[in-house]
Image (cartoon, rainbow, N blue to C red; front, side, top):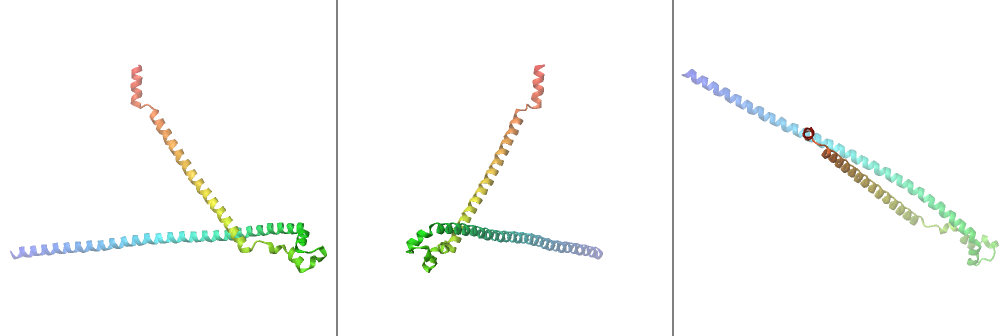
Length: 195
């Protein structure tokens, strides 16, 4: 009887050891699973952050490139404006300098060297002020850019709409072809009734 109790005690002890080791392993595997889940989440977050930083870098590079192009284009437009303005003002003052002398009270071209005559002939003072010119050119450039972006957007929308309509037509054609084909069972019935 004592041997039996010892065996029973050993069996219960072995069972309890097995159960506790199983529970310990289960808890350890749960800890490892939680850790791996967090590692995967951290890897996903890390990947998302890298992707976001790449996109931000790309956007900043595109903005810098746009601003450089914009500055260059505005400078070119400004030079074209100045050249056209200088050409027209110079031609105007050359054509009408004697009329301007009369208006200024100068009688002859001999007095063209006087400060009053020089002030009348100084057509450079008649240029549009630089700040105003820059403002007008910037507004013109921005409006042109806006029109271009709108045109590109409308073109993209029209292209997508055309593609969608083409797919609809293809699907409709496929369904019409499929519905116009007689079934194979119907073919055998039709040939049997003819024969």
